Length: 266
Image (cartoon, rainbow, N blue to C red):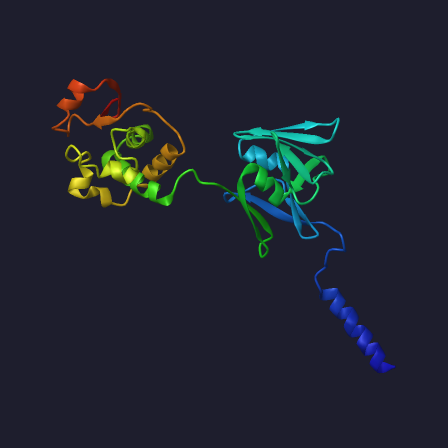
């Protein structure tokens, strides 16, 4: 009898110190991160599937979400996405294409949720699960490669390190405009090191092209590669205080603008 009492006492003690586990079928919550930035509303995990708040996710990406009460659906619009998702349905339509979501969308406390991997397909996002920290991780597809950032940021830094962000973006625009022009090489590296008509950019001759770029120049390069333009048609630039070979540009190209210490021509 004493032994039975000891066993029961030990069991009760163990139960009192064990962490509470969610009941069968209960929801567990998880943080949602987009490119490392956490959403204010959390996801919930049910039967191994993460369901994420659609409005919060889409608005983080700059998209609009419209709720239609008549059929309990949301319309997502932005970029190439024009998709409608319905509560209780495991498929959605993006324009004329049916997308399988894996699990049905749900509505909880007035918030529309969709399975993480399904909504990732619609929004063209990468998605992963961090079980240790209980996080749903979304990543946007990068519009540029690390090699493009590497060389563009270095030529921007070498040519315009002391300029404003606008001036640095303008220099990056010139490089990318040349990449698109049939008169120049079709890669950033090729444009920077072009020798068809002599040295095009002094930093490739004096070695400063290999210097580590500033953080602002890296950001300027990424902005350029993402499509930001302040000198959309310009193919040439020079600093009249430093350049000794700019007369050909003045005599043969059309002047566009001055930004900081640089003159830009198309």
